[in-house]
Image (tube, rainbow, N blue to C red):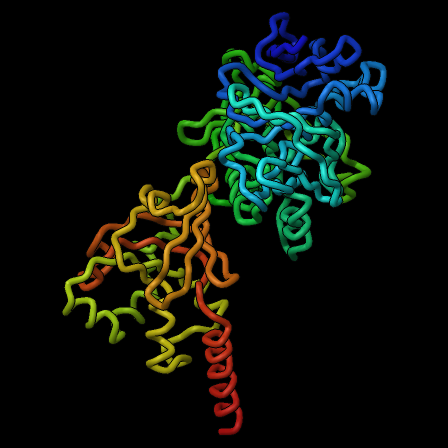
Length: 475
């Protein structure tokens, strides 16, 4: 018989709530029907909105491959097996599938749907295996498949290894900082898989470097986070510059954990395990000597604050100065057009050697047009312009005035990234109203941390700087 059941595991709790378990096809295959406690790791919590698609091996395939309770005794093995067969955050039906559709399972492994014939669908794995789809259930958003899916390449197999930690390792986010001269001690606050999935952060999202980086900078603390239950209150600062409040609180809902809670604005998280190892000492060598890693049951948000020390309102903008001095602004003023301006911050201009002297008038106008969209766009409106299928509303494309395509990617509540011709930027300050930055700039302004420009302009700017230095040296 086929059955669907939800149970849960929680540290030190007698009751069970919301741990996603197995759909049973045969008596021999009862891999996930018994709830078990796994140290301090909890995967799914009550109140979750489970939006997912199932890629389900048939009972025949399970029997042929000897998938039995005996072969999946540990909860780690069961959890890993389960994650390989669910697509989180998308409820796909056969009508949503098109040839070449690539999605990621909850394990982080990529699978691609292809059509063999009009109604024959196969799933192609990262290793090139082609697994036929046998049946489709619209009611359960389930595709029954003639095979078993593998995990992602280089995956961390332990059930206690959050996918977030794998992204940190994959993109070298922590190792890059550790190699920076003078970098102070850091503390990693690692959201559990439950926290990641409940916030709607899919493996697809974590597989985008800019999204993983935004989460990393919001959940990594400069210095140490106090974990003694004797503390009343302490303040720490994230790499993003946000102030967090740490306090002992043994009455925080169902998640008492260690008794330490962390507050960031309206978001509250509990440390459920201190100095967590996740079974990755062999898999991620640089964590062997890294003790300050704490598991938390929520994801700390990125907050963009116009009152921060780096706000465009406080530090001004060299890009705005370029724009005010351009021919394009005069044309826009005369036409009365409404538009949106994406403004690289000063640090981005400096990295690309862009100064008023480094560009010709034409290059300056071309650079500015790369960052102008001829419509009023607030961040909440961006994805209403999307021409993507409805299941992928976290991406949108818009064409700028220079005819370059801007690809917007929504990273849950952590902001929006923009990609143009291989250049990727993050929106760090958004929805600045018309005329607020400069009385002549009657546009909606969004501040970004990179320049969205072609290599030719960058090369030209670098060449101009080099010539200037040469002239100075010769003189």
